[in-house]
View (cartoon, rainbow, N blue to C red):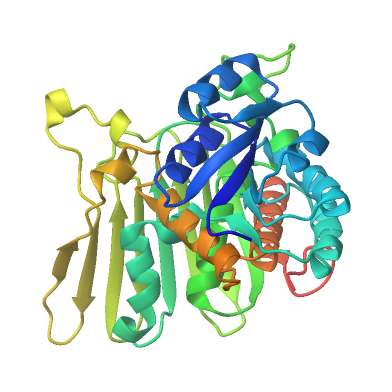
Length: 371
C-alpha cells in the first residue's frame, strides 16, 4: 500500500461530514468514494469532497479503488454493513460508535472480528479530546490509583437526523448505548477492571415530546444516572442530562484516588456558544487537586482553531484519524479495537435494561455478561 490513502465514506450525515472535514486535514489522504442515499446529505458531502465519486451500493464502494473505509451510517446499519464488507473486501475500517445496537449484533460481530484480517477501529472520539486524553494518561499516577470516577455530561438535545432515526430506541440501541457508549468506554478504560454490576435510573422527561414520526412519538431517554461497580471494588458514575445546554462546560470528568483528584472540563461545540453575548467560548482545561499539600493546579488544554472548525468534538476526530491512519500505514496498533467497542455497547445495553426494569444488572454471567 502506498503512503497516500484513498478513503471511502459510508454515510455522510452530520458525523460523516465531520469525518470528511478531518480527513481533508490529514497529509497524503483523500476521500475518493462516498455512499450516501439521502439527496440533501449527498449535496452537502459533495461540497466537502469535490473529488469524490458517489456510488449507490456497498459493493460499488468496495470496488471503487479505496484503501480504507469510514462507516458513519445510522447505528442500526453498522453490524450488517460490517458483515457485507467482511464477506466482500475486508478493508481497514473506522466504524462510528456504537459499533452495533443489540446483544445479538454484538455476538455476530465478535464472530466476524475473530477472523477480520485488517485494522478495525471503533470511533470513540471522546478518548481523544485533549483534556480527557490527559486525564486518561495521568489519572492513575496523579491519584495513586483511581478509586472513583464521575462523568457528567450536561448538553443539548439530540440534533435532527435524516428521518428522525435517532429519536427511537429500536434504531439507536437507546440513549445509554447511542450517546453513552462513549462514557461506558471511558469507564472501562480508566478504571481498568471488569465491570460486575450496573444500575441505572433514567427518563424521557422533556425532549422531543411534541414530535411525531409516522404517528409515533420518540421514546429516547433524555436524562439518566448510571452507577457501575467493578471487580476491584472501584465504581464509576454517569450523570447525563440532555436539556442542559446552558452549562459552561458540556463534559466534566473527575477521577479520584487516595492522593488526589484529576478533573477534565470540555465545552460543548463552539457553534452553539453565543459569543455575541458571552464573549469567547470556554477553553478546555485540566485541574489537578492533590490532598497534601493542598493546592489545585488548573491548566488550559486549548484546541487548534482549525480542528475546532472541523467538527463538534474539540479536535478529537482529527487526532483519532491520525492514529487510524498510522495503524494502516505502519501496521500499527488499533487503540480502540472491536472488543473495546463491543464491551461499551454491552454495558450500555445492560444499563438500558436496568433503567427499564428498575433493578441492577449482573455483568458477570447470563445474557448481559461482559467478556
